[in-house]
Image (cartoon, rainbow, N blue to C red; front, side):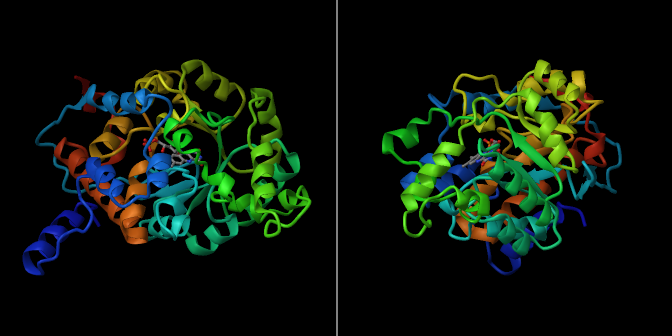
Length: 386
Ligand code: FNR
């Protein structure tokens, strides 16, 4: 099936059955539509970024600095975007980014997301800060591919228990997020005095963990505040450093990916420390205000280490065209963040599936119209600096 069949399907429904998409197909405008349905707390937590928001703006602006350079008459009737990344095959180089507390967007939270991802065979990355546990995700996701994103807790018994549970629940690749050893300065949440984790939201992996529960004096039901405060003690880990990666390697047999790499130097360090991949990412601008855009970091990192590591990308991807640009600049796959969350807010599982279908259809059209028969054909010659 061509992803772009979705386009004619939408037209046909509109013309012959008088049904129109409930959620916009303009993926760059999803935020606006979702904002109308989200509570002020959810809006602040999901949409806002660190500090003045300049990193998030830079992420978006960086996509305008590159333009697609379309080639004609190259025959792209037969197209195939399928790739295999770190042993996981996928219909296109697209993965659901790890995003915590998805119940802020919709009561079904991560369960809806993993089900939508499974519908489309798009791999799903489970956040340590999810509102559902490893085991619930495994049950909802069935055979669909899933990876696990680790925030390295300072309590080693919890770390080891998380890794065991992830393995037992069928998560194949481990994504260690490096950029959030402390939470960034987020005025939208600070001004409300609102942090979901302290309301026991987004800490379900912990609250279902025997090692975590062993650290509590009372049950979670008897003293939920103490449970949240215990989380707040073991989550911050600013002491984390490169030398600890060897320990992680001993504990995890599958591929290991470092998320949050923004410089060539750290890309090289990742190679030296024997990991399998990196995600070039600034966490959607949620951590450091005034940081470089993620896309501006990508080409040099790919040039330096792209032949030794799998290089994934996120931060700012909104449309099929954005996805094409990141792949053209050398990413092996892109992670989709906020847009799927907006789909979740607007329509639960169907909303996420809508966003994925539209993104893949737009990507298929943009790449075909610009002379490519598949994602693998995208390269530096596919784009030009504006
Ligand atoms: C995130 N992100 C994130 N990353 C991670 O490694 N673990 C996590 O738990 C979360 N949680 C999270 C919550 C919310 C509400 C957002 C928006 C993002 C970051 C995410 O994986 C990804 O890096 C960004 O979403 C990419 O930026 P854009 O494209 O969404 O702007």
